Image (cartoon, rainbow, N blue to C red; front, side, top):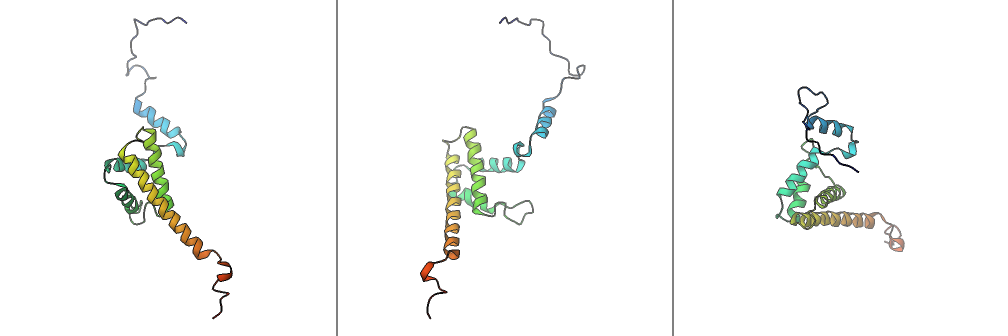
Length: 145
């Protein structure tokens, strides 16, 4: 393969060449063409930056911060259940790992917050199972008074 040097290469003039397009407009065009699942989410980006700023405050502080967040209406919780908290913390963990921060303090703290959400979810499921699962021979319906 022969590679020739381009000694007389000149960049096209922006005003005279209609094929030159600014980077911002190209990024907007690409983001419009992406499926909805691949588009950047501005709400998640804001949350991600807030969590990065909370580095060093601990897993309980991150967990409480996520529980206290309000949704778009300002009244309902942004993450109303332990499953929703697990989902968002897992999404943050994946993003941190993609950026090579899996050894950082914030990764450990968000992982701990994920563990807290998992524990709450497990507790609620266990409680619901005890409440709604038939108890066999010791059921209160069969007991003698």
